[in-house]
Image (cartoon, rainbow, N blue to C red; front, side, top):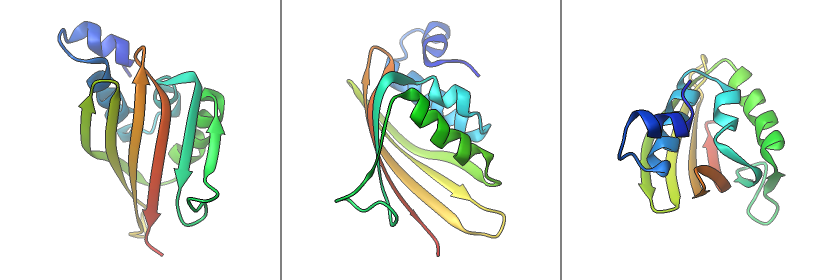
Amino acid sequence: MASAKEVQRSRPGVSPEQAILDALRTGYRTRDPAAIASLYHDDVEYRAVNRNNPPSKPLLLRGRDAVRRLLDDLCAREMTHALVRSVAGAGSIAYSIECRYPDGCVVVGAYLATVKDGRIVNELSIDCWDE
C-alpha cells in the first residue's frame, strides 16, 4: 500500500491530510495494520470512547506501537471495513468507518485527528456497535 507521502508525490496538489485519508481508506479496505499504523506519528496520542470506555475513562494509547497493537487486533477480526465519509482541513481530518461481521453485527466509528508533518499526532475515536 502506498504511504501518505507516496500518494502526495504521485498526485501533485493532494494535501497531506487528503493523502492520509486515501491511505487510510486503502489500509482499512485491505485490512493492513502495518500500513495504517505507518500513518501515525511515533508519539501519537489515541483516545477511544465507547460502551466499554466511557468519556470519563477513555481508552488512552500513547505511541505508534500501542496503536499498531490495536490495529493488529482489529484487522485480524473476520469483518469488512469501509471508510465511508471523510473531510480534510488544514492540519486535521475527520472520517467514519463502518465494519460488518459475518453474523450481520455492524460497528460504526467516527474519528477526529490532528495531522502534523504528514502524520496523525492525536486522534479521538468514538465507536458504537449492535448488541
